[in-house]
Image (tube, rainbow, N blue to C red; front, top):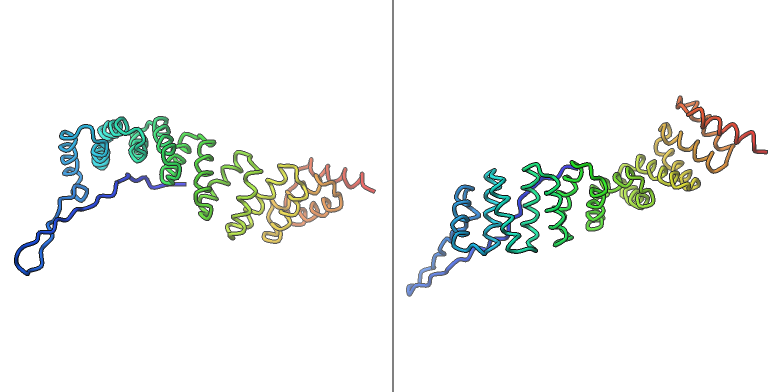
Length: 277
């Protein structure tokens, strides 16, 4: 789930002044100084000078923070971004880069807060959602990570990488009802079909929907006939459905494939077969 961290830069528009002369020659455009095209040291010097002249301009602090961050001066960048958001409390990009700075400084909890504030301001910011997901993973905050990928998947439902990450979290957190439609989407997109069909069957089984689990796992068996998890799952699902004959057939198939079954499941199969007329 790795995401490349990047600093947010505003769009810089170059203004070219056209000089008209009395002669009939084609006028030349004057080249306008663009600080964003300069080296990092020059950018730092430029924005420090601009901040000194306009200390109430949040964008200048933001750009200074970007330059300082590029220079590796993380604490100074942090101070600049803090000033930017103090002057402009709804400055989403400044909060996003503040989160990156805090992440680089090792303060994951504060980085989480900065990223969350940026998302509050701009809920459709996929880059910041991805960065917050990474910090959440580092903190083992699986619920927040799930929330991030839920938002990303909602914003871009055709992005199968988002779907993969989201459904893996749902599965791990045992949120099976929510996981099923995401697995269906992945299967329809021909994404790791055999494995995702098995996992969808497991979701149904965990929700005590034995008939749906059987149908799903039988489809998985056509894709991977010797898969141990699929064949073991079918034995348990047929037992749960109360179908002794099918459970016995599934258990015999496991034996022929050399797939070990839990003794408790075998006892359940035998009891079911004996109890049926």
